[in-house]
Length: 426
Image 1 (cartoon, rainbow, N blue to C red):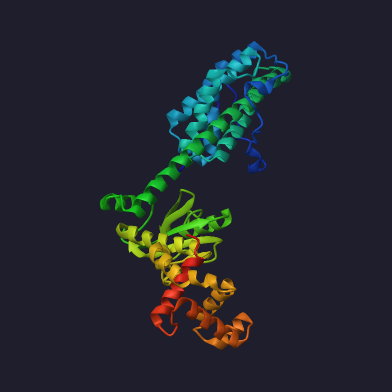
Image 2 (tube, rainbow, N blue to C red):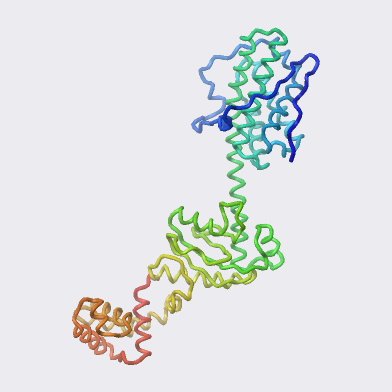
């Protein structure tokens, strides 16, 4: 949007404005606000009031409309974001600021009363709601201050006002500006946080509703388009428990957060301490945490994908694993974790009798290694660093205590189930 405005021209009886003074470094325009300031009015405690000539103030009041126009033009020329603010709103707020400036100068004390703070806070909150970056708001304050200094100097020269009188006024204005900027910036931050919380809550409601299937199909498609998602695409639901902020940010980046130039690939939100969401492909595998994901499904069917993602997450956590898993990668373990009754029955059948052995722990470790090695005695012995006959003895001892025959495929499967169940943290 074009916003380069013509410099205000000479007005009869008023100084001819010159080109606005550019800051040598744009970053210098950002005013640092100390967070330790307790109250705006308290910041001037112990400072003597500035004595300002009433005659000079009266002269400035006569120039108030021109000063108003001058400052507004200076800000809009330097900051594109301020060109997007409705003119009526901006002019009204500029009037509020000028009234407070002249009131402070007339009272000879740069202080803020309760109403002043409320008016300035409203300006800060409005800037946040209008989407003006906080850096731009601070730069606008700096630009307006520079323009005011330039204007006052020219008026003083025209009316042959002593430099000391002009400096008295400017000193009062700058002290008031410091107080006002603290109030405005604090209000901006409060409004910004409130807006972020509201946006997060909207994201959570949409993500939760999509994954639980509580949003009607037509509404779901409309909201997906609002979020920049393809309503006809397929997405993979995921559920993650991530411990560190770095991995959480990597997951959000994979979904398409933190990069406005990147196409949105999904959406995620914090729900009850977990990161849940959906994306166009499987989540990254190099994150520090546990992530379960489901099969690709259309938006309307993501409830099924999320159910599988939950099973994968619960199973991986029960097995003490970390990384990214779907139920295919976990094999039969999701079934073991889900059916506690079967697991407990098989544990009693095959593992409780081992308590009668002299070393039940060694016996169970041998059974695990034996099954993991494809029931091959030599490989099992190598893995356990024992003699092959030791392995054969322990297998025979298991069959003796349980009355089971490891030559039976059914017994082997049930033993594996019992061993996996006993190792899970459910």
